[in-house]
Amino acid sequence: VGASWDGVDDGLHQAAIALMQAVSDAGGQATITSTLRTLREQSFLWKRYQSGNSGGLPAAPPGHSAHEYGWAFDMVVSPQSWQFDVGRVWKSWGGAYGGKRDPVHFELPGAGAAAWQLGEQQAAVAATTPTNGVGWLPARWKSAIYSLEDFGISMIPGVDYITLIASLLKLGYPDSQILAILTEPVEKLHEMFPSIPF
Ligand SMILES: [Zn+2]
Image (cartoon, rainbow, N blue to C red; front, side, top):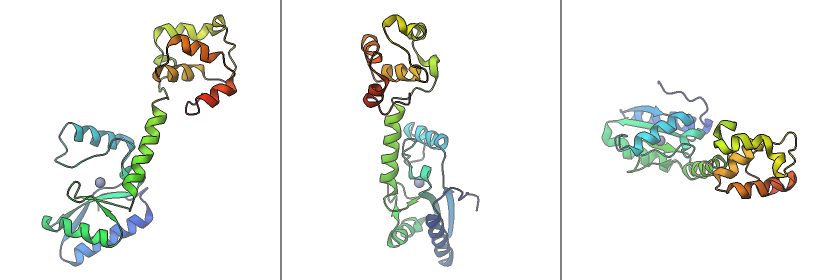
């Protein structure tokens, strides 16, 4: 009761219901404390964990948690001494369990590793994607972006030069090299920087 199963893998949900029933059949009580998390919720938990205020429970960086993909739930068992026994039952059913490091965490097998991989992919894209348009550009580029023709660059309609330049700056390219890069044909630029959405 309380936690929503919206967006949670259906097989995982059914298995969680069976696990809660097993605890209740044995005379205990199971309480779900976390299911699907938004990116914002995971960011909050990550920051809390990093500042040492998570009560000993670990949290993955945003984008990296199985909770964000509906592949995990957290469950507290009463009596408390049953927590690891319930984890063992879950593992005997083929699930993956957080164990000593994260005793309340139950997930689909392989979910943690898969979520971590997705998080790393997102981080790689995010590293080259500016979020704030022209506002992100340093002052010298804010004016230069409107006079690129002066640098021998023929601006192609439909090409997002702001995103491209901001991304190249984030990647650490110096101004002179960016100007040289921008003289290349657009097709070549897309080949050179496939992860930049321009
Ligand atoms: Zn968890």
